[in-house]
Image (tube, rainbow, N blue to C red; front, side, top):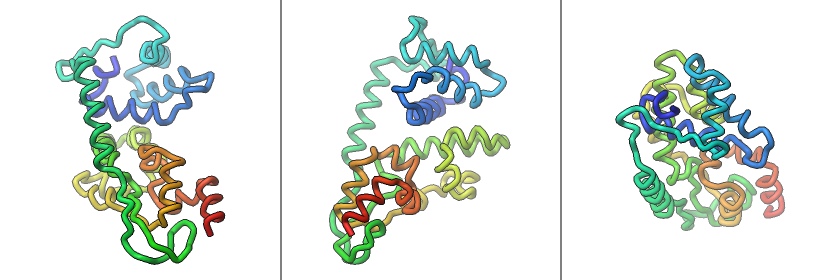
Length: 222
């Protein structure tokens, strides 16, 4: 049913990514939380009760299968697993380059030291982030700001220049933003958060410095 409500497989996958990353799988109200996100995203298309049923089926609490109803969504489980494996391979080949680039001040611990380049939007996430930007752009074109915010998440929606939402082809510069970090700080950033979380929640140095664990480490390193 979820696939049938979306204009493309990419949109469905973007929605699924956002919901999964936004949920705490250990929380007792996981079903209610996910259902609320779905109901809000699809507005009048899905009732809260329908969203609950979709969610329960998706996480295996019922035996009702989710059956794609559009021709473009008839992707088999084998195809989806193959695509996931391809994405994982791409992640390995596109990970942040931690080679030293110069000497200067680390933007986290402020030490004068050899620096590495940290991509604020890690390269391994670019494919999914581009898909989300495109979906959000389509929503903005329909004057549906709330849908765009849900797709991107509050942090990315606030940080992405709105001219990119008007024309997603301009996203290259945003995706390529970097900061200069010493190797210990750079390693700590990637130890604390996986790359999709970094893209979604910490796309600026200012956001990195809002993380208590990163600040604690930076003060210790300094």
